[in-house]
Image (tube, rainbow, N blue to C red; front, side, top):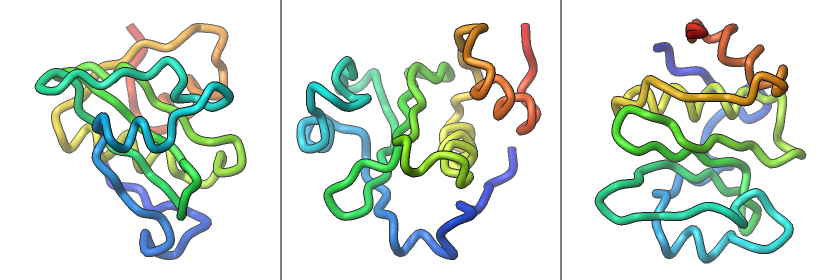
Length: 118
């Protein structure tokens, strides 16, 4: 997989890359955001979170070679962030995922990046 640059930001200096762990999960988790159902199992789940200050930009989580969660905050969509997160997960051995067939936007991103539908 190719590493994609985040379109809107000329460098990652504006966005901080954080490990997906219990501490960071608790820092950004709330009832009204995308992390409300997320879990972190030490030794099993791995991942990356992106933040701009105290704002969650997006995250990706995998277990072994399977991506179990990928989300980008609404205000940061269509900027190449999901592509960048997918490339980082792939660099760490995660190369499989599932997606709801009704999620056309996500499917379009995956196909554009060369993922295959089974």
